[in-house]
Length: 285
Length: 285
DNA sequence: ATTCATCCATTCCTATAGGTTATCGGAACA
DNA sequence: TGTTCCGATAACCTATAGGAATGGATGAAT
Image (tube, rainbow over all chains, first blue to last red; front, side):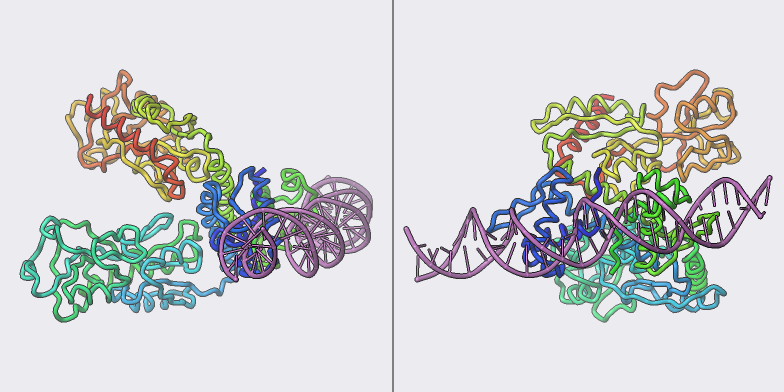
């Protein structure tokens, strides 16, 4: 009936990205006619045209665009399935833990220490990733658990445990009109320039694009914009900046997250250790 | 490298469900040796054993269980991709709208009427589904849009617009000790018997299992349990029951939901019509 | 206009992935 | 110890995916 083979889907996606049969063929290390035939095969089976192709141009049809969108996800899912199987078969496989550099709120080493004490602890590989793609790591199985910030990161399809809840603070230049305040409300920050976060769908400010917290802090110091973040993300605070609690901003959660489809047993011990460590750290403060 | 073919994955899943090569072969309409070879092929490629098989028993290994979980999802995704492509190719394809019988809060016909007025309206197929699987319809592309109740239904991977927000009401037999109250708090309902919702992960009461609202209302009338639902789900209220607002229960949202990967253009008009219709209906009340 | 370069489609051939039937061999059980 | 069940193996077959060469449409260049 449907039967869209993984390989064919990979071929399709390569062409959909290159919009060029020849280049796609090179990338896939096969000959170009094989591609032409494969696409025609898929088109016949699905009963739709995927590409409008003259000898000069290749373009996606609406059906092609739909298949690209859904197909990319499906192919990732296949990859994740294979990875998960391989991983689960190897009981010695290290636990892969993804986080943003500087985004651990000081919890990384307590968590690792606590986990190392567990009888069933295994090696932990730490992966540092860019700002927006830690969720991808979890979804496609490149990592087992990750530290995310809700509601910054998109927790779709992930299960999680909250390690810490924190207010959000506005980060202002120390000369800012509100810099002396004990707290502010969101409405008072209307009209300010906010960052556009690179690659983050919700990060829709009006100001220049920033890729990470360090860049953001530079921009704020330069009085080009202001920012609002969970407090732990900006500690220690660079000179020339102040942070003021925002009373009516939704609280932010530092969460330990993992794929819903992950086998809970593999990571239960780690989750337990992280909760324990964060409780302990909270008690100390 | 990985390359787990769709067909092979289908074979694997069939065996994983049947736990019997012979029966799986029948179900797949192929001969049994083909299955044995396919599984061995996958095992070699992934480098893990998927089944422990004696001549007497077949059982999944941990790796097999992982592959089953992730693989089922991946295969669904492939099916959804194929369906989406077919669907998008056919510009005349009807819009498929899934909802629970009685779960439309009276909005179904206003929505359809409003949508029918739109210049780009197309035929709408209405699908009625059981209590818990409307989300599946949206995820695997059997439906384009659906009416769901948050936080009852799991909105993971779905985009949505809220059509109506409502308090939740406790549904009590009219002789219940709290039946005369104007409102109650959750704590006052402690110790009551709650339903277990069939097939709903969060529906974890202690009482008998119920499959739908009608069953629930019967059970409440028979004083076997009490319930708590969005108000519109129990209107009109059968005799012998009362409903009391629960002040501190999280509000419930009637939402129009669709797959995140859906091409927004296809359904934008319908979403607009639904919002319009629900606003209009709210104004009338 | 004519030629040229580009790039997808077609043709033809071959290797092999994936299927078939027949048979084997181990495990439970009477 | 024979019988039954069930997966693995062996031997063979064929549909098809992929390779190489070629064709043919299209836009650009002179």
